[in-house]
Image (cartoon, one colour):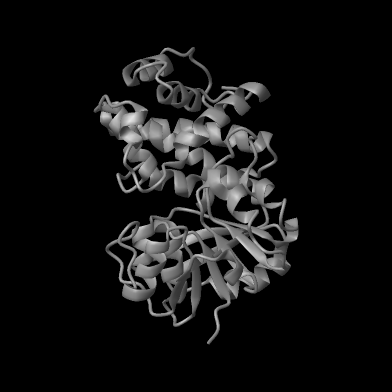
Length: 332
């Protein structure tokens, strides 16, 4: 059986997706940047660097050459958001569906991932996979539901859904690519804030309030950018937000936890194999919100905390000292 699916990126999430897709005997070709990781996956069927607890399916094969993926009809792109442009620029030309799995906003340009990928692929061939997913659970075959937002609408869904759906991996259709992208990007920043609350020992009431007020910020930004409210109320918005704001399995939550306990961002991020996307997204998201007049005080506080402008306790105090407003006021 020849591979029909390729995964670009062999981090924890890319490896977990490959494992889920290969679980039914399908062949999946994975591109990894590190030659030693390519060798380990092919020799030992393991990824000790990013997902050490998951024995990998026999149908997974790794390569260090993007050209080997050129003929595959579907590529899942799972490189970190800030590296997406550089990696996809190396893809050989071809007709294929690109399923974007990174969650973030490109620093310096403010582009969403679909905007970045549109430089190499027609919009109707772009899809976004997003939702409440921890890599280790997906790799273990635990039940997971995600949004598959298709730029090509129903026709693209009809191509992709049979290839990606598995008994424990259930995609739901959307054609709101912008909403799926914004939900995934904004929730990473809000998860940092929830980790700060945990690190400061402020309790569950405070975290629940922050999730709710953070969701209001996500909704304001998303609607201003053309997303649909119902998309952000679904798996790729509220669902992902609740998951990543509630567990140390979230890299962004863990970063916030370290900040709340007094570490600097540089200290908390040093020596990590995996990427906390929210750390790169917060500055550009805060800048976009200020430029477009969108009130996002939690995002702004996380940004100021990450750059060392304020300590964690001052960030929380500033939020609590904001003027009292109606809960549903759009410009809150």
